[in-house]
Image 1 (cartoon, rainbow, N blue to C red):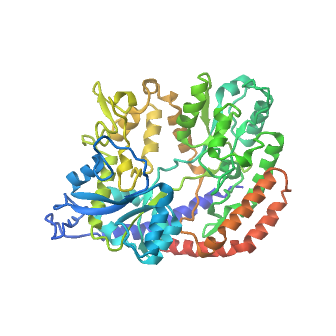
Image 2 (tube, rainbow, N blue to C red):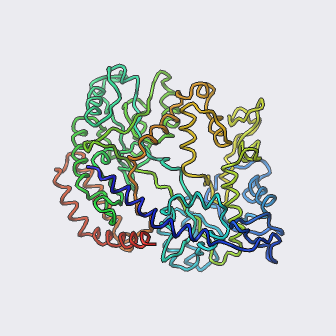
Image 3 (tube, helix red, strand yellow):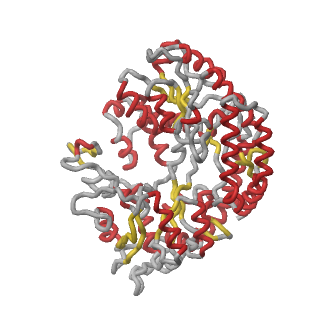
Length: 576
């Protein structure tokens, strides 16, 4: 059965224990209310810890760009564009790019700089926790605890104070080695999408549990909706993924395991709210694998399941070879609308709740909110300037009514005015194309928003409430004319509403730290052992009893050591 109450209690307990410390540290921030600045251009914080005004003379902040394919308007460049000009003119900050490279080479550039004892850029955005660990060990990045308490705005502190676990991944020995960026809450939490027109043809309702789902899949298997003369697998799954094939962003399978009570690859308090355990070795996973083996044998899932990644797997659905797929709220727009409905305008797809499993409850992988981490050279002299920049990005991404940014960042770049209304349609940008200005941020592409806000906005709009804030108007303006007139027709908004209805079904990966010592040496071999065993069971090449053998091997081959190391980390952050 799902032990979700314990899972939730453990997470809430961590929040309760740490929020006191975080709150006290925020209240401790205090400095003189002097707006003049010192001889270096540093602007002191006011009593709320907010760096005021504009730096004069301008201060320089060095960083890098990991996208060498960015496009610019004529006359603009990486060093001189609408965003760098804004930063200098509004804040007195000159953004300087030390280097530009492709995404796959970014980590190598930093590692080479570390190995050669070269100067690191002032500001670095990294998504690799192993690299974060290496940077911490090098002693070359800054503990930002004091700077965040002193210079973060009240708005930023409130957002980052929503859950102390946001800081777990960057914390070590009481220090915070960077600022985690925050993903949108439940942005990748899956729900099911089902071909409503196919359901209508077979005279069935959307399934609410696994038993009903099996009956629907069997009926879909026997029907020939696309007229190709084949018994196409009704459930689109793809399990070719190097990280976690069972908990991915499209063709997700985590809900199958979650219906039994565990998620492979996730560390959680499955049995004891004070101890993290590895999801893949829980007995519930054995039951879920047996069910997947049964579904494979019956033809409910493709024979090529182990060869399909997320995109190839989703093509089963968009090419009408399957009628059910799991994916996030944004999946209705792409690839469902963009591909399936482009080729078949009569296709009707409905988002539905994750069906309850044999435990009587639904379960799915939850979205980890902390994302890439912003770290700082320990010799960086203008952390106050960066925090001013950071505060302003949050302020302008969440604008107040009347703000010059309530319609977007820059007119003519990410929006235009047409007939007195905001438009982001490509056709309304004469001789130009829309530009996502966030691509020019120091933290390229990071939106910097309250992780929970957009979900609540879309649910509000779906339920027919009129937009009132600038953020609500921005979401409202992205809907079609028909969807504005009839909000219930907006399937993406409906998907958000469904995910929020099932938010207690989210199961989180609670290990947010860097790879442990044993992980570095043995995780790849353990991951291979796990994947090969699970796929052999699903394909029916190994009996379900092979799961027990796998658990024993996993424990003896480094799993027990990893578990001990992870719980050492867990106890450390849990007791802070």
